Length: 159
Image (cartoon, rainbow, N blue to C red; front, top):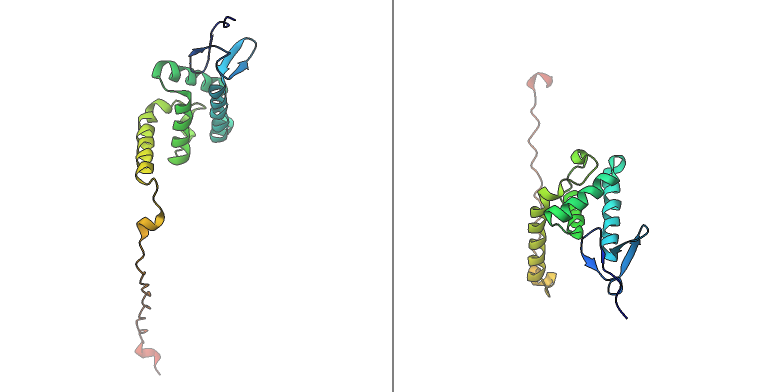
């Protein structure tokens, strides 16, 4: 049996056969990778949480499309970059203007962070805290009690 025609994912822009990949139906005759669809939903949920009332869905959709097509950033990379910027770096969302325009500017910083996290996890793979702490007894030094200065006595009060 011949395969059906290829369809194009609106999120990542890749074409695929519906028989070969898990997909979601978007609207009437549009199909998207299941992973792309779920990641897009997560981006919108996350930005609703971050931006609150100033959240603009159509603006974010347009920015996602431009970043995927023009900047070559994956949709998962956009989500992870936003999580890095707003949760890990705890940056303010006041200047976001209802969108995600910060992503192309902080994406390189996010990739450096992710690379460092991966390298650290590889260095620490298979190690426990005891490898770092050691078994030497810890000597507890008590904090010395402060010496109070004697109160200054005023001679005119000594009658």
